[in-house]
Structure formats: structure tokens, C-alpha cells
Amino acid sequence: MSQEKKIGSSSSEKEELKDKQTLINKEFCEENGIADLTLIVENHKIPLCKSVLCIASPVFRTMLEGHFREKTETEIPLPGKRYDDFVEFLRCIYPDKMQKVTERNVYMLLPLAHEYDVRNMMKRCQTILVKTVEKMHIRDVKQLYRHIHLSEMYNLEELKERCIYLASENTLQQFKASRTIYQISDASHYKIIELALRRHELDKADEKDFYVKTNISHIFSREEVSFNLHGSFYMDSKNETDYLKSLRIGERYGLETGDKIISSILRQKARDIYFDNIEEFDLLPEKIKSALQKKN
Image (cartoon, rainbow, N blue to C red; front, top):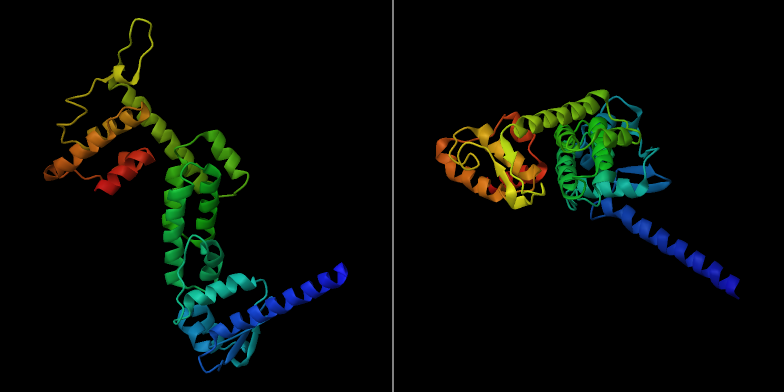
């Protein structure tokens, strides 16, 4: 009896799955049900309109309108594609659906957007991935290397640069461990190490501009750390690099100076204090740089 129920249940599930797939496949026909092309993905037939593919993708346009055999075919198999991923891709390019690229679907859409040269989708994927990295993986070196690997596969320069700078805040041991998992290019790997060394050089130079007052037992608290800087944390300086030095030192030693210095920077706008193209700004600790960018 239980075996009969099991067989009946299995058969019912298959029917439900078949009905669901049939419904999905009909999503991409015109309202009157007319389609002039069928794509075959993982043995599923997806009827759709050829013109939509040609408008969305230069690759499909060349395939379907150029001098290739696909031009005269009514059914075209797409080997190596995952059905669920391709359905999601179609939902994002179909005008009556225009589903958005999100953190949920970006990793499945990126390879298809790249392969079929859907440029707007590629831009959206990069934007979402940068936000995902900044939201979830800012201190996860392995994930940063993973996203550098993706950026190199799919030519996402903004994502690559962002991840390289974030990764450079970490250690050589972490770089090596991460690279055994995600084989990023030598150029990107060495850039991370170069930036990490530059951060170290800045830290050493900063140490010359402050001193630590300790009590008799040589145990000091946060309040006992004093800066030997010009003015009050360079508050009166017109030099952008002086502000950045104060920010680095304050963050490095856990001093509550960040908001104070940022507020001062905002007040000094009339003095034309800007950080564009200043290396020290790019190498600020991420926490401080993000706060400064948000307030600006």
C-alpha cells in the first residue's frame, strides 16, 4: 500500500513539474500564442519570438539574421545551458516582463549576459556585484578573490578594481590561501600585494607624526594616546594629505576622531579640499573612506 502511494505521489509530482514547465515555456510567446522560434535547453522546448532575441542580443541577431544555418532553423538547441538560468535570462530581456537583476539572480545571469553580449544587463550585473561585495564580503578575502576571478572572466573592470583595493587591507597569508582557491591573474595578485606594501609604508610614515604618552606602568588607554600633529588633528590645514593622515592614524589606533575630522573636511569645502586622484584617499581604511564618501 505504501509502495502504491509512493508511486502515485511520484507520478503526481512529475505531472505537476510538467505542467509548471509548460506554463513557463508559454511565457515567451506572444499573447495570441504565436512563436516563430523554439530554443531547446536541457530537453525543454521554449517557444518564443525571434525578434525579441535579436533586439536584446547582438550575438543572437548575428546568429538568426546572418549567414548561419540557424537563420532557417525553427528549433535551435543550446547545449551546456541550464534551463532555470536561461528562463531567468529570458525574463530579464522580455519587454513585457523586464525582471530585474538582483543579488538573488546575478550569478546565474552574468555568464549569459556576457555570452550573448547583453550590455545593459552586464552593467547592471557589475553594479549589483559591487554592492554585494561591499555589503557582504568586505573582509572576506576568499570572496574578494572569487569576485576578481569573475571580473577577469567577464571584463568587469570596476568590480575588479574595487575588490583589489578591499583585498589589499589584509595579509599576505590570506592572499596566498585565497589564490589557491580562485586563480586570479598574476597582474591582479601582484597589484594587491603592491597596495598592501604601500599601505604599510604609509603606516610607517604616519608613526613619525605622533607619539604615545603612557602612564608610569606603561599601560595606556585610548584617551592617553596623543598626536604630535600640526594644529588640532590638522584641523586648520589646507593640505588634503594632512587630513588623510589624521584619518588613517585615528582609525589605526581606534581613536574617536573620524566623525570630527570628516565634519571639518566638509566645513572646509570653500578651501577647495578634494580627494580626486589622491593615492592616499584610495588607500584609506574602507570604514573611513565609505563614511567620507557618504557624507560628501
